[in-house]
Length: 371
Ligand SMILES: [Zn+2]
Image 1 (cartoon, rainbow, N blue to C red):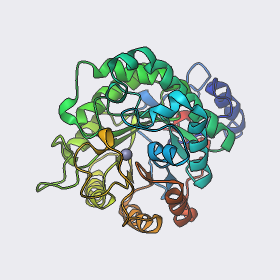
Image 2 (cartoon, helix red, strand yellow; image 1 turned 180 degrees about the vertical axis):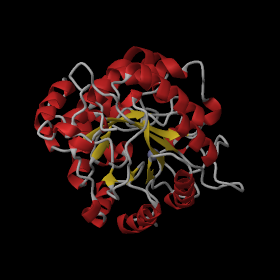
Image 3 (cartoon, rainbow, N blue to C red; image 1 turned 60 degrees about the horizontal axis):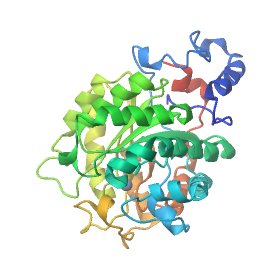
Image 4 (tube, rainbow, N blue to C red; image 1 turned 120 degrees about the vertical axis):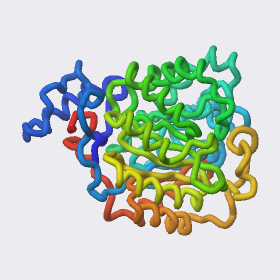
């Protein structure tokens, strides 16, 4: 386990808080990197190799914000999806984060997933995108800070549509990811690149984080199609071998590889294959997954972008936890829920794995340069 820090209670000056923690940790001087000062946030990006990762402990992510915001009465519609609450009712965003934390989430993800041109349109993204992304980070930190030991994951979403690798614009992506990183950096303990359909997206995201981030580790999460044509692959055709290759290239900063926003049943064979290939490679990464609750037959095409589906009736919190237990058996240690997964689903995971939960020892934190 490498990336955990005590939840920051001072949202605008994380390094003040970190320096205070260093004073505590300094009781055991071998655990304090000499380079860590408020002006030198982390040595992680320049370290030669990550620390051994697995202690067997499990980290609980939150669930999907969009549909949960709708459930608690926030303004919600397409095409803005979860961004509408940021624009019209930020208090609902804090409330949603807080309810996931109360359910047992140890990492909450900033609510900027839909603050992208695909959902807001080019003009509104250009005008308001930066401020909304910053707001999403501030609200997540507000919620995490009041709850104690909770990490904030900064969302790096697909920019041109979920499940739409053909719409990926390699010319526009670098500037947009740079903007997201710049706006969220001060609030974020870990970066979560999510719902990726192309390994090329991860390349651009890593470059943006290297240039504009403060050394936080990256958890890279890929979406999967409903069906596989022969071998397990992303919608772009990129395979798990391709994922292994790109993560190997960025092994100094990528701390976890996950799958998300896919049918939980489809994620099981993918996690199994990923775990096998991580084990046979020299990669030292954690494995994880957070599936959605979309109906089978309606998932394949563009569900997250154009339509609002209801939770599939054949999946409840207990049956989801049962599926997730298979991932944990295969080696996954980061688990949660994506779209249409709610606090009760997260609570079921937190309960089921209560004896194995991560403890967020700051001495093991990537933020403390424990490499
Ligand atoms: Zn999702």
